[in-house]
Image (tube, rainbow, N blue to C red; front, side, top):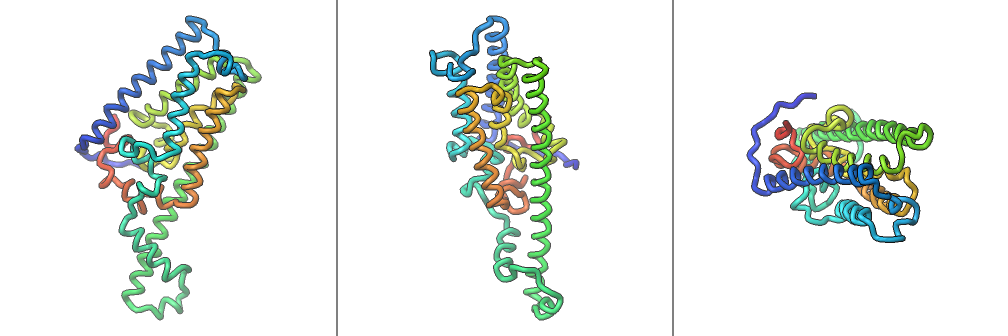
Amino acid sequence: MKWEKQSIQLSKQAHGIYVRSWVELGLRILFAIFFTVYIYAWKKPIEALEGLHFFNRFTIFHLVWCLWLWYMISKLFPLFTSLKAPGSTKYLKSQFIPTEGYLQYTEAKKAYPKALSEGELAKLDEKERKRYDSMMVFETIFEKEKKANQKGVLATILSWTALSAAIFLAHMFIKLVDNRMLFIFSCLFYIFDLICIMLWCPFRNWIVKTRCCTQCRIYNWDTFMLMTPMLFVPGFFSYSLGLFSIADVTLWEVTAHRHPERYCACSNKKLQCATCKGALGCANLRP
């Protein structure tokens, strides 16, 4: 589906978030380059990533562990929400702004929890009939958006499982990918996360098919995707971070199941263009 780009005037806060994100993208690229040189050119050992060697002595990989742990913890708790993109915080109750249509829908739903028969509809006066019809129209829109979100989730699971399986086969059976390369893959996924937001995203364009990052149904899956290659390297480093990444996705998905209204633009004003006005990942600001 195509959307026409609109002219956006960024607020100072949004501009600051963009500047920090571009700087962070540059730092992540340097991060990946450094560790590629560190591991392959300088031939430094990576035993801290394997087994319980993490506890043998302090290495630079302990700093990576701390960095990625903080990255994951920051998604579990509502820390510095004003500095984050609305797409990543939409699971929070404090960040939910119900639309007028959703408020009217929930009120009408209390009066009409089930669909009415033709006989019951005939008994309604004109005002109540309009209220009921509006409720049913909104419910159709709401259910359609929820179904589209779930379809995107399923497509993401299938595509990411296929990619993970390919990496696993290349590592375990074909022996094309060793533990060092798995770590570099995680570093590349760390970069790719911001590239998806700032430049181009295959999930947005081909799989989830949302307008922008703010409306993205899988926004906070990034930590698990980051750790996927490292989960094939048994050890404290990978398993401890893997548990936190799973906790991130679990919190996100449980909230989506219990409060789907927070994840839909028709019910959450925070996800609409009129409210967003150029938040990080805005479709109007992509190259």
